[in-house]
Length: 281
Image (cartoon, rainbow, N blue to C red; front, side, top):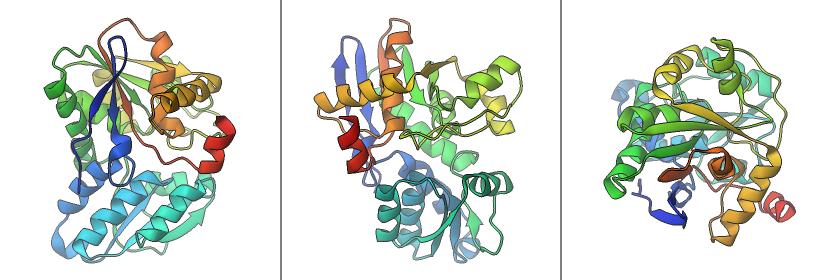
């Protein structure tokens, strides 16, 4: 079940779109459901596969259960325990691999020896369209919104929203892994050095070529938050009684750099390990 999540005031002229309140604690259920619903039934019957650090995996598991088909999840070895436990509870078959092998599965849209329809977590038209419903809901509830700050992981969320609404969509990254900013500066997709951190839901080592092409025409700009600002944003959100994961807090961390405007921050997910949250607080 996909919820129409609330839009709540946070500061003067700033609202939060709380995708943390989706049944899986993340927006990923939107795109995963749309993509799996759209599969040819015969192809879907063979099962589905995705490569995910946790949130897309949960969305795929929920959508697969709806159709009574198996879900196999390729996860990086750095995936947090909270997300791995949730995947297991939802019946997903876990295959843990190195980050590089996980990234290759995303590039190849497959993993050796695993059958099933591959549901790409970002570079998939149905996934992007499902994500775009967030933008539609924002504009319906707050027609005066001028800019929307969105975490940039692989781009499926930001591009989906940008396609759905005629507003400035700003891609927000963390300084430990900001491939879109680097790629836009270079004029082409480039590979960056990625530093692992508690911000595990975003921050790849590059940008997929098709996503980069769409970003150039649809995304109004990028903002990059230092890791310490993301920690402070998590604490600010907790003070507002919002539990967010690192990726979900990045738009709030970027507010200090954003132009003054009527703004919505998309809080993309809330699946953070309790031990990590305790340490950050």
